[in-house]
Every structure is written in structure tokens, then in C-alpha cells.
Length: 355
Image 1 (tube, rainbow, N blue to C red):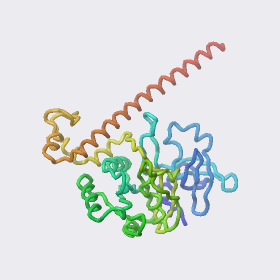
Image 2: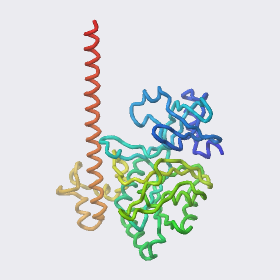
Image 3: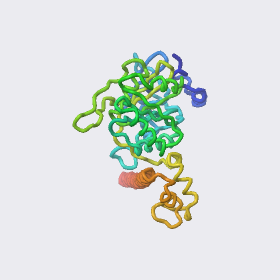
Image 4: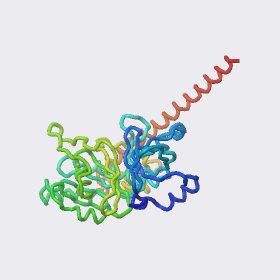
């Protein structure tokens, strides 16, 4: 195995020399647990922690390592290491942090393709698919939809599901797989490219870990049954982890996400809801909200059946979430600024008292 097999690229090599990091080793973060990181090289896996200086100079979560990152590190004991720097990222998959206003959670970094997995037997939801598509599109990550557990549906019902998706979501590859049989995995394996990084996205219980086990050819992740009481998946996967597949692809598995909170994803919205934005260009007012205004081309297209109503409703909901997130970010910045001023005032007062 080489660094290139883990996804290493020439631009990273240039960064290493430009930043005088050539005296340190290079590895990729394949797992993160409570600020402890597993860093993989072509020959070894290191239990790593962040160098104190890197931790104290970090201004926000973006300055700290995440699964998928390339890092410069130094070994200080048998399979122990200190992370000294994080290399530039080509992409960051993120969502709004659950229960934390104005903050984001990094799902994974340096992702080429997002595999959006939905089971067709239980909580199949096109609105949720559009949310994942928005996250991928905002991060410049190419989405692929994976429909799992098709063995639980008659063929006619599967065709109906595919038709419903294609009515609202255009030009996105869709692969159907069976969790109990090998159906569909040949098609999926043909899509996966050597040296490219893929990230599994989806709720608990949709079959992400089972899918990973199938395409890796070995039991990499534990799998479990759906809860009979709530008809939802259990969190068998409790952390993010990067796996190199036998065909050379690189796959990151994730814990199931029951909430897909939208952060500042303007570009992602425009790509996911392209039809709505195309009609919006013909609206009478530039600041049209597409809810009540006279001369709104979007509302006219909606009335004429040229825009799917459910897609429009989902777009409006995500837009409101995005606005709320942006407002929360501004409030947080104001609080942080006020706190900073207070700290400076206290320091000045202490100096005056001292002298």
C-alpha cells in the first residue's frame, strides 16, 4: 500500500514542502473518538493526539483534525503520535450541530463522492434525500443514491419508488441493492474508483454497515436489527471510520443521522433545487421570498404544475432552517465579541489596580 492508495495527491506534497513539514510523517485520519485519532500510513496505524500548540491556536472546529484529513505527525512511542498540522482540504461535508445553535459538525473531509443510503422498506423519504443532496452539493461532493433492502419490496413497488425519485431529483445516479442477496453490488463496485474517497450518509438502520461489509468483502462493521418498538435503526456504528476497499476505493462509514440540520448551504440549495432557482430568475422582485408576492414566477410555475409541490415545500422548509442558522451564527459572533471586550476591560482594570 502507498500514500496514493489512501488518496494522497500531488498538491499535498507541494504543501508539505512549502510549509516545511517534510521532517514529519504524513498520514490520514481514519477514526476519531473524543479527541483521540487513529492515523493511518501505508504500513502502520498510530494512536494520535493533538499537539498542545495546535489545540490552543485553533479558532474553531475547522482548525482541528477530522476523519478524512491528511495530517503531519511525529512518533514519540510505539504506535503513539502527535499531530502537528492539518493539510488543506478539498471538501468538507458538514451539517448543523445537533442541539448547538450556530455551530456546525464536520461529518468528514476530503470526500469525492457521497453515497446517500435509504432503505425502501421503512422511512423512505425524498425530502430527506434532498437534504443530503444539498449537503453534498454545497461541499462540491458528487452524490450517488443507494436504495437498500430492495428484497423486501415487490418489483412493481421498487419501480414506483424509482419513478417518484426521478420526478423530483434529476441526473443523480441511483443504485439498488439487496441486504440479503448480492443483487446490485456488482453495479456499485463498478462505480467505485481506485484512490477516490466515498462517504456513507444515511439514517440508522438503513443498511450502511451491511453495505460496507458487502463491498469490502469482509465483516468490517457490526450490524443489528431494527427496533421493533420504534421501527428505527439502532446506532451500531458509533464513530466515523475510514476503510480501504479491495478494489482500491476508500470508504468512510458514519453513525446514523436522525437529524440532517442545514447550515449555510446557499450553493447547495441552488444545485439541489435548480428548477426553482431557474424560475426565480423571472420573478418581479429580486428579493422575492416565493411565498406570496405578486409577479412571483415560482408561485406561477407551482400553480401550473411545472414545479413539484412537495419539493417546493421542502425547499421553503430548508430555506427557513438556513436563515435561522445564519441568525444564530450572527448572535454567537456578537456574544463572543462582547465577551472579548469584557475580558479586555477586566485585564485593563487589573493593571490599573496593580499599579
